[in-house]
Amino acid sequence: MRATVLYGAGDVRIENVPDARLIEPTDALVAVSRACICGSDLWPYQLMKPGEPPRRMGHEAIGVVEAVGAEVRTLKVGDVVVMPFAFSDGACVFCQEGLHTSCIHGGFFGTVEVPGAQAEAVRVPLADGTLFVLPLGEDDALMASLLTLSDVMGTGHHAARAAKVGRGKTVAVIGDGAVGLCAVIAARRLGAEQIIMMGHHPDRIALAKEFGATDVVSERGEEAVERVRKLTGGFGVHSVLECVGTDQAMRTAISIPHYEAIPASEPAFYNNLTVGGGPAPVRAYMEELLPDVLEGRIEPGRVFDRVITFDQVPDGYRAMNAREAIKVMVKP
Ligand SMILES: [Zn+2]
Image (tube, rainbow, N blue to C red; front, side):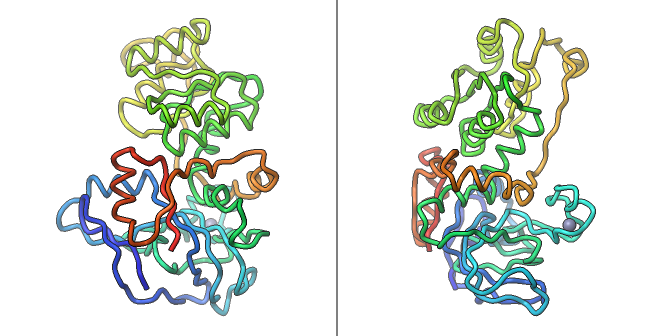
């Protein structure tokens, strides 16, 4: 089968690899009908060092179950499923608390150890706990939005939950990438009154406004902090959703909540600030977000602005890295 292999910084290739197959009795084999390229795929694409082992990329997918192991109970051949970016047993103490990304038997797709989903097929460990069966055929028009439940929509929602976004609250979203855009959707969905998008790509900002952003701040650093204060009567916001993951973004994030920022190391203390977050347990959020997708209340699939075939995957990485595309969907 064909699969995406990252060999080094900037060196991603489509190659013929041995067919994915069942190994453990708890595995499922999924034929991938849609995958995507993630902002986090760009980290190794930019930074992979010579000598690091090649990686089979991809951690977001929708597909059709092709085979199941002897111990798989809840899935059958032909089921259309969403694959979250992490696999999990759905049973351990962490999974029971809804923190599937900390599953004691779990792990992540697209790593050196676990081949990823930018491929014609993917082996899914702990299939019963991992895969989420969709009540739709694989060609449904909602598939783009459903595909975002495998990562970016769940991740934006996790940012909003961690930041305690709620009805009537003021929110700043740092970053206009796919996760930031989904965070705008999540903030609006949870009832935020003012949603300030902090980003500077005109096409992405336009989409953020359609998703519910009420204000836009395109400045950077100190100027951005000042603008947010101005937009909030001098106070700052209740919640900051940091959706970039850089030092600069984090500095801005802890400078714009309520009240005057204290320089140096104590803003968190004086602002009564809570810093939280982590890998989103997207598997836990699927049930909550699914009805809103199915009934058209949210349309996170609009973050996909390019659909490519397998042969175009290397160019898809290049386009996302060059910020020519917000998010790229791969249809084998
Ligand atoms: Zn678990």
